[in-house]
Image (cartoon, rainbow, N blue to C red):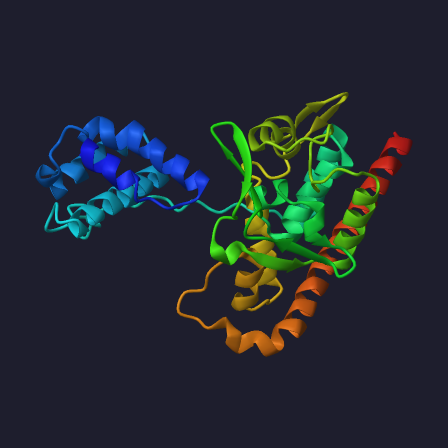
Length: 330
């Protein structure tokens, strides 16, 4: 198996992050167990017993990823005449396991503003704006961290995510600019008016080449942002002489992308427009059929986002005034 994996690896053509993930699964799980086993002696029962044992230690998502990667390895072994059938098969018999479905956490516009406001206090206006932009565009972390100011057209209210350098990749501690996650991720995102104004003002105060950076103008790293800013802003705790309550316990930065999609669903935005904006591929659907209504749909989409922003600002203002009144009364 180890010999076949070495050959198979030379045929892999995926993004840097996916490549690092595959390599981790291979070196940590698949090869230690199967590396010395002849490929044609690996049976479906052996694989299922192995996966069942791993279930006691690892999350369901890890087991699913291992099964999929192993299936790719053995499927290609079949194509290369090393096997007649693929021994990695989906479970179709037995009672199976009823795993509780984990809710995809998302935040409403008021929670997003609360998180952004806390990050403003912890760091800078720029990184506060990063959170707002993520929630109101649905962009991925890498797309935001790698966004160059030349890829913004703020006169038209557009963000262009390009094929050659549309995302910042962090693999084994090294940062590089490259292709975004999928071909569908190469897209143009329209901005609601308030976000265009905020980005214009922020970029006017700086000459940094990238839109979102550290205070020193360096590339953002996901782990550092998570530890120093995101976790305390979302989960709460002590900050100076205040105690912050949790805003949305368990929410991840990627949860802002789920939030954006949820908002679009709530606002009745058609699925094809959601897919285009988020960079998703719609299987078995021809979205060109809807091209004649794109402009009107997009206008409605942006109007909904603008309304959410204004609503969150008004709620924040009222809450702040209420706190000030309580402070005066006490």
